[in-house]
Length: 281
Image (cartoon, rainbow, N blue to C red; front, side, top):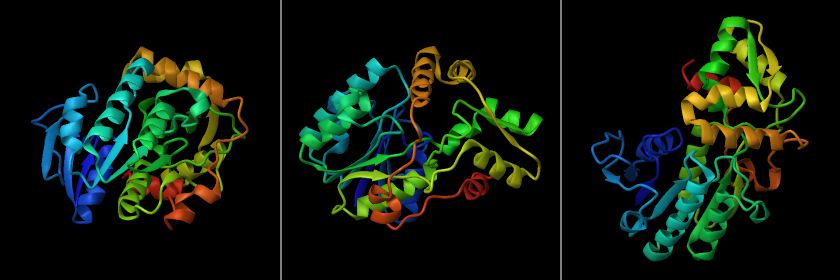
């Protein structure tokens, strides 16, 4: 079995490579640089999202492809989605697993993630779509983690009473490996904690882990934009802030048990405390 992993040196792709390697599977790592060293990969291929030809070549003959869109301007994400769909249609890999990375996949939203999910479904290739809500790794950003350590507050742009089914990149990797083994499971698979937890629940888990009192601190999407812009750029940061502003109108970001990894795959995502330990903090 050979599996092609997008962003193999990145936050989502690297754990998938590691999990597949631990399972004894052959991995082709897709990166932007041919000289990249990817532990656990048998092959490293320089194939960016902007080349349908290179993607087609990389996908051809693969038993599975793991796809997710990078955090860039939405216009670029739409172009990448079109290229991925065209490459899958031409190469016909046996299986595709797509992580929406928390972006809406409902066709009515009109976003890049929704376009990619819909386009991949139309190719007729076996497809599973992983739909996380928010990533626990977001809480490792310096602005958040440094505030926890320095003054015992966990700042984040959600309401204190807003339940979220948080998931980690490690949970996504577990689900990807399981879905490559289960081609009978298609459609949406929700990955995240259930029942969903609130900001104060997060803060309590951080406090227990670090052995100190930690309180949750609601900040505005604009404050969050300012904190992440130096890391991901002004355009993507504005898109992220817009997503959190839209989220404020929702009642929650909870997964549904019927489509959960817990039910479909028998996988229970890590608690916040377990994730903090696994993250080596």
